[in-house]
Length: 151
Image (cartoon, rainbow, N blue to C red; front, side, top):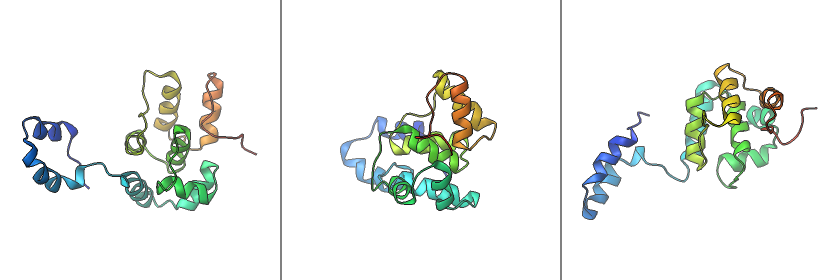
């Protein structure tokens, strides 16, 4: 799906009158965030990569039941690491991770944050195993992204 840059939408809203909102919402529906936006984006992204959800849950170190509830947003988490683990296991690029985090309502990875910088470098080097990312984080004194150590 083609995305419309946020600044274009901002420009449309700048001088809009309240009575024009219905038309705006109708014409731009596909570009607007929605409650299930994360789910659709996540599912479309992994389907394009040929990765199954079950594989992602296993790689992310979570049960299929719990992971499924997070992805469908039936259960909402405030733990950014849970979403990062799902994205890493799904082999998401940096842009895809940031879009997923944003759609989930969480802050994007930020280059000025030292821990986020470690994660960014890992992703940019195609290190998608959350436990390998943990090793990089631990080597620099930062908290892991996973809940427990790999067996």
